Length: 172
Image (cartoon, rainbow, N blue to C red; front, side, top):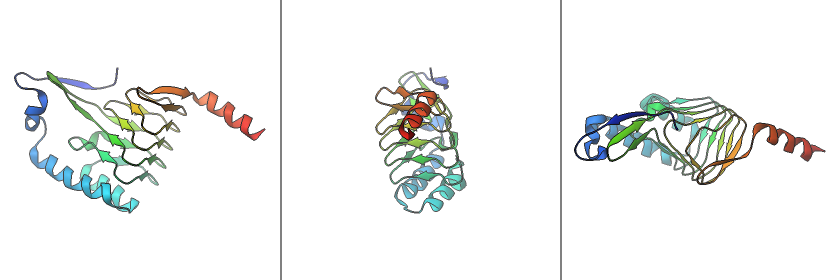
């Protein structure tokens, strides 16, 4: 199970009660900043917008590609390490709104991680340092450091040790 906190709701589904859980002004501001960030080709500007206006933790030399969609309601729950690449059109969520409840969870992406294009990272997930996430992967559980993962649902393709052995074999 992912590391999320559950909040029960009564009556209409939790998304219908959205502005009881997060202020409208915050969502509107986040929407504008995220849309600007999605289209700007200047990585330092994009990272500055994330840090300054969304209160995200973004490491040095991290590159977030064009069209990446950060969580619009709780971007401050997203942390990205240094020298990491987030691929084109990836979605990073820190919330889930369900019928009877909503869930919030921190997303922690380590240092020197590569996330392939069109991936989705769900709330409460930690991606370890040096991990590689294949394109179009649904990251629904933690990713061990140094692992290569992919698919929908995600599975470990190579562990850190297997990756080291593959690199040694390629050298020989």
